[in-house]
Length: 352
Image 1 (tube, rainbow, N blue to C red):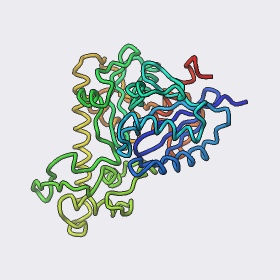
Image 2: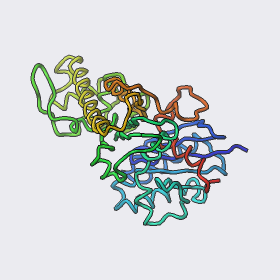
Image 3: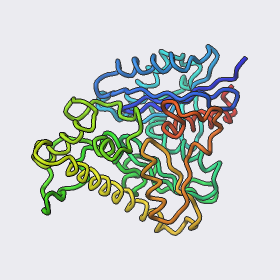
Image 4: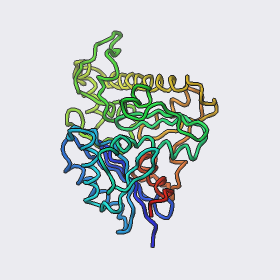
């Protein structure tokens, strides 16, 4: 019989899962799950992932989450309880274990309100703890569709100052800046156009997915959300959305202008994340040979940051026991927290 374990990462926009079989990661799945529109989207995504992974009846399920922040829930407590129960409907609560940060894993059936603080939004720590078990010193940068985590690993330990979202944002360990869903209006107030600075419209006209679609860096299938205008996900449509940020139609200027604006917004995002990396490196805890470990669908930006900071670069999927490295759909680096909870849970004494 196969020894199976599925790691789940329940986000507010995506549901991710990795299947661990006989100690090796053999499959990865991700589905759009816009929780702010209702739990029915979670159930649809869970069904699709289970259909894809086909875990056995005796499979154990290890879970981490950030989706409890979705405004469909009145509080974090409600969100953690609701998402735990929702996944339990699909896989059985008796086979589920929740990642509780430094406390390890707890049975889903033991969840109480007082556990919210350690269960909620802890997926970053799962990734960091696993990475620290594989690389002694590093700057772990996970750039996803919505957020960026910047975490120092020192002497095989996670060296951070925050735990909650608020604390982590205070210390620049969490930045609400990703490569798909971030509104362009959040990156700056002005953009260069025709030799002048033009104010940006404070409207949800375009997102970072439009930037990287025009630069050619957006990974295939990474943009699972509806576009800002509900329109097509093509280069022409992205150019149209970016043009609206400066109050123009795309047809009013050459396409090279909108590609230039995309490069400008890319630079703004790199500078924003780079300043966060500067702050962490200024703590003086990281040796110069420590790699930037890149995770998330935006890890192509981490490669650029490593180059700018003159550090080596390493993909996080090199740290995982991956059986099949063939590039098909999403891979382990895209869904690092799900892979991490799967690998960490396999070592946890209470999980059989």
